[in-house]
Image (cartoon, rainbow, N blue to C red; front, side, top):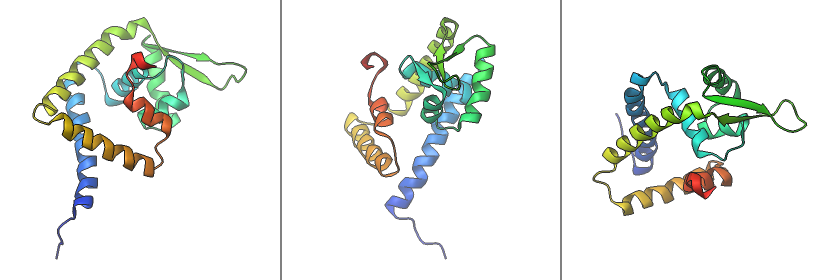
Length: 160
């Protein structure tokens, strides 16, 4: 016999489902431009993070392990969209930088993500969104979300 899920159980399941559906819709719309989720997420995060970000910081922001990100970066670098630079005395530490050639692709990513967001939030009030954000922040904090990650979630690129 199946028992009904309580609100917290439903919340957890719905959170994962909504995130997957959201990304899938963006993937569907960006696929026509040859952009996979790993590529568009990496480029988008690079555009949102400070200008000098290490591969490790970028992997954390994207939510993948370092070796997984390296394959994506190799491809983006081969296409001339990003460049990696050795930072300081530690030759193992590489920073990742967008190249000017990425600008038209980023514009397309931003257009499509903005359109998807507009559709998703078309009948959801600002108050409802703010309430969700507060809950997400509390949950992320309890799950080890770093203060820097939380700060980046609230900043716009011009704030940095």
